[in-house]
Amino acid sequence: MKSSTRKRRGPTQAELADRHVCYEGAVQDVVTEIDFIEETWGSLRERPLELLREDFCGTANTSCEWVRRGDHHRAIGVDLDPEVLGWGRVHHVETLEPEQRARIRLVQADVRDGTTEAPDAVLAMNFSYWLFMDRDGMRAYFKSVCDNLIADGIFFLDAYGGYEAPMELEEKRECDGYTYVWEQVSFNPIDSRMKCAIHFEFPDGSRIQDAFLYEWRLWTLPELREILLEAGFRKATVYWEGTDEETGEGDGIYTPSEIGDADPGWVCYLIAEK
Image 1 (cartoon, rainbow, N blue to C red):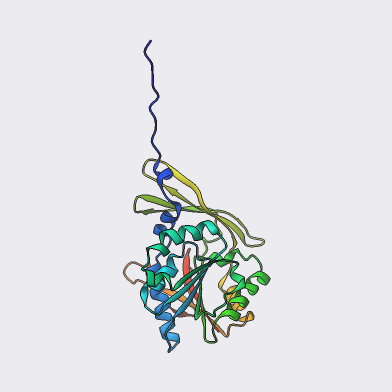
Image 2 (cartoon, helix red, strand yellow; image 1 turned 120 degrees about the horizontal axis):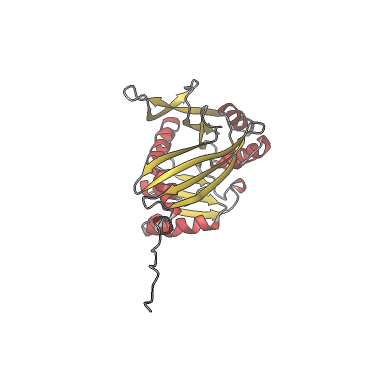
């Protein structure tokens, strides 16, 4: 009798992929982000920005880009998740030069606890701070940032919106070797809470389902500006993206604005000055 052997299937591309690598490739652009921070700081302050605190820092990719930019640049990354901090230490911090590593510190802590040293600037990017679901919770976080910042410090945040923002939808974007999938899973118009997910799809048909999951509140810009002022900041300015006249798309240039476009989807910066 002839014996039959079952052909062993190798691992799928999804099984071989690293969700943090996929996220950074699809979502983050730390070079452009740090460019904006440096340019905006330079337009608002006459002294150099040295100590940056990155809240909800995740893999600390942004903090590492900051310390690489200048010999006097220092960074503190704060996040509650030990797994993502550990990944960032191995894949980002350890790749820095020894002198650069001495100027960055990762802290596993609640961002509302502040840090022992007052930073020049605090960053809360990728809408991470939206996990605070009510005004009291958001105000408490903003106040902790304001209290911890140096006397002329600046708080950098991003926000998104548009008439598609509360919709239940799925959007796909091709990246290098995989497809990024953003899904707005559910939205409750009564309390503005929503659930979102990121998935990654690969050419062999495999998929990382729910690579990242989010539960947050869809905040509006008027709400956020009001709460920033209530928390003690003297000024909260929206930096809106300009439009490329040829393509009709965003041109990547953000400037102080009081009027925005009623687009289906937009991303902007909020700059709060102490």
